[in-house]
Image (cartoon, rainbow, N blue to C red; front, top):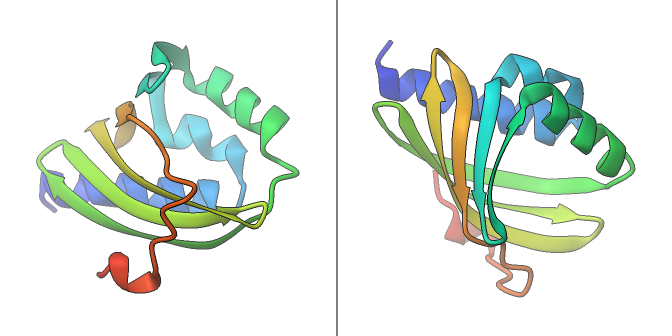
Length: 125
């Protein structure tokens, strides 16, 4: 299997098994020992366990539905173009990740659109 395919597989598990099923206990299986997040508010590096605990504290009661995404990968980088409904509100995003040894170790997310309303045809397989 190519590095690109391994990277896509790691991110597919992140969305399908962890996020869409709200199985946040999988974070240490999916993310590296440290996970660097470059976000609109700045950059932070946390452990996989800290991120798991954060999600378990803040997201377990959230309703996640209508999740869909497309992955584009080159070597150890993979980009997701995605959309879902969080508590009934649609969220659309483009997010990039870096993968090491099958685990997500770094991500770039400059923002999430909540008024974009991408339709199903905006994310084609």
